[in-house]
Length: 456
Ligand SMILES: Cc1cc2nc3c(=O)[nH]c(=O)nc-3n(C[C@H](O)[C@H](O)[C@H](O)COP(=O)(O)OP(=O)(O)OC[C@H]3O[C@@H](n4cnc5c(N)ncnc54)[C@H](O)[C@@H]3O)c2cc1C
Image (tube, rainbow, N blue to C red):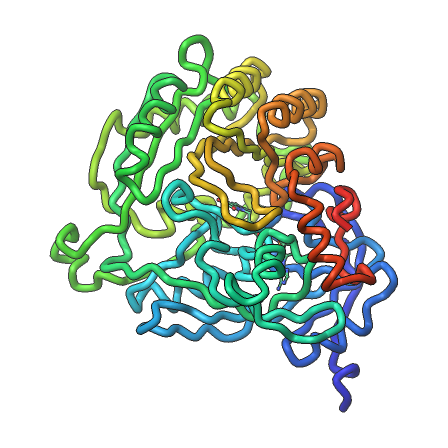
């Protein structure tokens, strides 16, 4: 049987995690062996790789074209070198199940472990440790990828660095990643030692974040955007570090690297068309969430899923916003534009939208990737149901405020940005486009997002 006969495909309507922007494509399931056949088979509308579809908008969609889904490959750990070489279709969930019991952690994890390694590199994901460790691409030593002409190349920070850094954060538009080698973080235990602070105002949250950031590898704050008056932006700051064996109680010491990551619930498929989120339910939830946190607690031991991936405990929670879906508005502003961050938070609070997912983080310096999102300063991520009429106008105003101070928006969360907003936020776009022109002159790789933003 020829390789062509082995291609498995079907038509499907796809969305991202936010359930907005549906589009229809031919989904082709591939592995390393048939990848070249699948690329040669692409129609004029081109193709794009898709991982686990955890981007919020449309970067892993290609309406009218093909979408390539790479099968999970192998996970090979080199304990001496402290690295893992992993198939690009493997999930972080699978990687963690292999490496944590062996005394290693991933260098960067997002707020969900249901992402692929290919998706992690293509979005150059960041975690709660960006202020100290940078983003995922900082820890990648090699990417094996198949280019548009089906040649396979290995690229790294010292090996065709232009293509390497264009692929980190390049949203799948430079080629199909097959395998990625990245550094691992040695750990003594699978527990995280967490310090929690309940803080009564936005000013208190931001002051404490800056004061404590060099003491903790991980740091993140949840904000209450439905509190009013002086309490606007009050929040709960959780700082974390990998616990050492001396911190474990006798029971936990028997299995210091024990790791279990299970879902405890799944949202029912039938939620009301407009979702279950409204201002009253969210206001009550936020109040409960704020009060539940201790005023100050230090050294509480939490599991990896509890500290890093609490949202993964409930499957399909993205349906709570109803059929129209939701957006995550995520942006960065530099340190000297902290007033802009404060002003946007106050304006969001004044709008009194039913928002419970609001995450404030500090970023350290960015890396050399032209399209990587993180830069030194502050970042905010806010989930908003698209059914709310005012959000278009509000987010348009925020876009202008963010761009005016040299900030930008995260491509992995974008579902509606204009090409102009994107271009102004990413001034090194031409540099990235020159690399893409070199490796994909015919424009084989394309997505709904790349066409909307003028990336391709
Ligand atoms: C609950 C939740 C929390 C999150 N928290 C964070 C966070 O804290 N920090 C953060 O940075 N992100 C976060 N994200 C976003 C997520 O990490 C990124 O969107 C990530 O890229 C998703 O990976 P995926 O495998 O689902 O990729 P997809 O969404 O399927 O694809 C994303 C991009 O990767 C490309 N791609 C995928 N595989 C390959 C491949 N083999 N070769 C080339 N390109 C490929 C696609 O073409 C696409 O452009 C979060 C998402 C969710 C749902």
